[in-house]
Image (tube, rainbow, N blue to C red; front, side, top):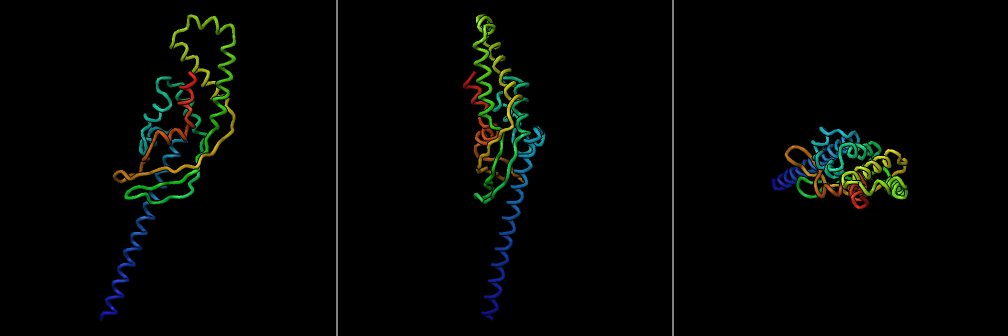
Length: 200
């Protein structure tokens, strides 16, 4: 009888472990699917889909809402060239998963180089030197934004890859982006907003 009880106890423990492993697998799969859904929404610049995982208004704020819609659209359009590859996924505590991923984006350093070249050429022109004397701060900002839009549209197809850990957390029944979301956006856009701000 004692031997039978021991077998039953082992069987119950094994079943509980199997259920736990199954739940963990399901959670990992759900988190991965949500991450991929979010990344595909970014690639398509699909506001409605992005909002399921992350605030689209936060994305446009990162891109610099003050610079206007045309600038936002130019920067957001670069996401079409973005790609990603999930390498691994692991538990990070209750209702949290860390996804290790390669994120491939345009080489924004080339865009910034093009932007600097264009601005330097502009500054050296006689036309600019005449206009700058009567140019308002808003006019100057618009001119610099236009130069960045041109640099983006003329950018090369060179790409860079960053390998990062992305935190996904379960919120209710959904998996959403957790951790430092600004750092994640900085990877997607290679901190182009900060670069532009420092140059204008």
